[in-house]
Length: 311
Image (cartoon, rainbow, N blue to C red):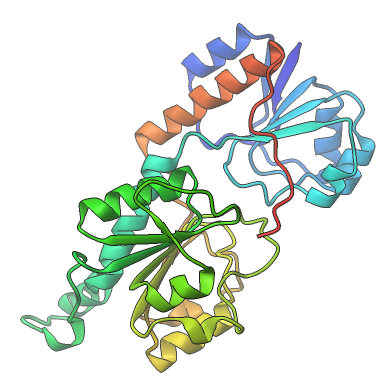
């Protein structure tokens, strides 16, 4: 049994490599392959670990050996989901059980930073300002309403942290399954009621969750934070809402948009570099999950198969 990490691991250590050798032959590539190189690597392995590479229809049509692909990430927007669903040869899973603590802490940190105007206040302080209050009036989080779009493992953890701060927590999801401590409402009702909105859903959802159609429901003074890779929001609409003052702030992680877009220059937007998950503990937990899922697959157990999302 050969296992191959096909594309430049963000983090790997010797203990992980040793544990993988206990499962079979193990190879690691420290570059990001072209599509043709990826096909070649997948045709030279039984199991693949994928972090960066796009798995396209051509890949599915061309690969004959590899039967199982494990995505390092919780998201799976690098997979052509329609092509995947229309083939039967390769099974793909994602790692869903490793980042809820780190990402939820990033979410609350971003909410606090935007609410308390920390970045803009720091910029003024660097310029010599002192005892400058008026532009930075904020709210206490206690008693405010936190709205969660997505109440999976990350959303549940965000809810716990929100309740610990004395916030009322409401949420919405595709399934609308009951979640302890979260009042479920429609998306439009959530946008109308929440002082703070946190988005944590897979970035393969079929549409923007914040868009021109539902922008009218957004509560005045709202702050929106998204840890989803593609943000799942219409950034042109978001910019206009910021300019009008309807939104107080927006926090995003790993924004994939042209640098010329005007959202980059807005002083009430904070963008981080895809670091929501990136903590010492989370890095190791990710490796542990990868090992355990591959061990399970070899023993006949397949967990967390990806599928189509119609959110």
